[in-house]
Length: 472
Image (cartoon, rainbow, N blue to C red):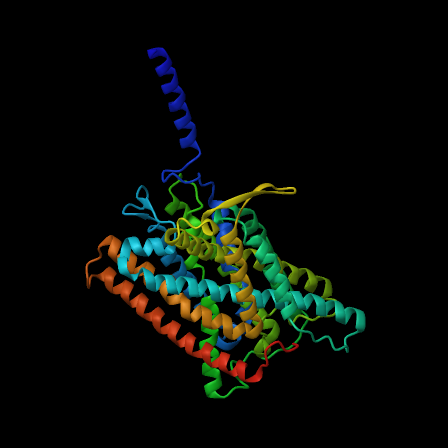
């Protein structure tokens, strides 16, 4: 009898060991993310539609000021990202309790400010995804216009609405949104990151080709604008650059995909440094060379103005396909934290609702078994449809991304990381470190307010000229 009990005990212990191999210290499925996948997620989130407006932003600020603002945002973003990385586990950044979302981090460090954090984070997510829909539609429409000019000649009228492409993008997102969680998106982020590299390099190459071609352009800041218009444009340009670095709201969710060893905060800091450094190099090259190619007439999306005709046509087609594919991935990277938050909150509130909690198994060809949840299907599909409709009604690329960047950069990228670090490290009030952090926070607040004012003015100007669902 004792022998039998011992045998069962050994079997149970072996099973426990096997189970522990498949789960992390918090009992959840073992995380498999690496430095490479972390960098891919970051690049997918950072090099988004923001890179397309940088030539226009540099045109408003000038060579020196534009480059300085880009590098300044990069330094601030990396610094505060490192502060966030140490907040993933509390109280100890290596062995403490995990915080799965940005809101969890704020709750653990600042307590009652979590509601404000949630508003800032998810306004950013919603705004960014609408911006991605607008940008993807512009790129998909550019492919169709290129074909039109190629078939009918350069004098043909190839104007067309972009909203059918928004619908197409939304259908793709409805399907991809049924991927249950962030951990299963690594393949999509790697593909999207590759696409972002591709179109950024192509844009850089085309800009060099145009400069080398000897086309003379004016690069005098605001020469054709009144003093007031010049100020508004400068403010809006700062917002566009802020949007280009706006990935802090998904940092914690990205970190939550990483393996437990090496420590997640150390890997995340390396990934952030690599990701932000890489994107800044691309940003400076694309922004400055794009400005050199177009001068004062730099368009809001510098890849839409390279010519719909030969010899740029083949490259133009490929570039805009790359943009569309990248934004498909970027949309998901931003949406997944919001999807998870809403679903977890609903499960807490209605734990006995079968509509919210139950899952059915269906066999998907070439995939295998897939667990479908009715609430996930309805809620995520509704969200995608809503963002697509808003994008159709307000398809203003520059003003929209500038406003999103201005409104969300300060709270998510600067204020909360700084305040959490002060609380966690118990920084003494009026110490040198405390003063430096407060100065950083206040300066970024002023910059964000200035950018928001310029973007709102630009948006109001655009609204006056636009009729919803018109052909563009």
